[in-house]
Length: 349
Image (cartoon, rainbow, N blue to C red; front, side):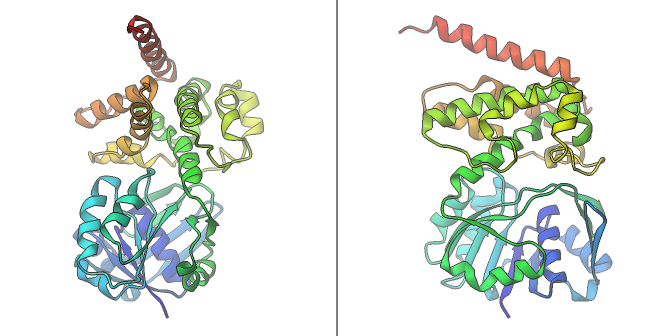
């Protein structure tokens, strides 16, 4: 039986690893001591939107804080926050066997490249987790939205596909993951809007002003992607190019035609919102910040996404959680966009 290691047992790592373990796979977790203690005491209780449940008793869970645990793995799933990727890459380089398959199930578009540069003797694949996972309590994780795992196609992946199928998490394989990653990032641009709103995702997305904020961030990104020659994949019934206009529909129309988008747990929030609530650094620089970096590479600007980055960083530093109304946030982003346009008009030719 293939040995699978989850490096970074947070919400995504515990949920995906727990589902694999419940499906009969041999899974080891590398986690912080706090999470390790919870898993040893409480085991794993997993749930999915639609009331499906899985349970793994504590005695079946192999969890460690020791990186050398990964030395025995045939497959390593990296689920740490993006800021930790360089450190994780260096640690794995010292322990993994040649030929080990490493999958980046992380936000952003560049984590697999960082891992690949540090792990030339391993097969490193970009992956993508489309769904939201909520930590409901010690060892309890809930999948609050839908979607299937996406991954770069490779022959080295074949020995492990049955593990994911048995877990009910079939892998959708692609020859090129970059369009998929950018398509996911377009959707993840809502993480910042949701975090700043301090509302559940379903409530936030049900309000037109917040959706217009997301639409502005997406429209700016789509313009830059077109300039860069990148065509994002279609992950939803609505093509990416139509999404900003679709988000601007009146609330009643949007609710009628966007049932799939709103089929999420009523209490679910973005991981960025959860990070702010817990006083943790967010991944905004690997989501909206990726758009800003793309703009700089093209010699352009991304004022809407840049302003969202600034607002989230301000929220990270604040002692009190501020909830932006949709109208106030929309006005802030429009002002940022107008200011950038006026500034560009003053630049010398």
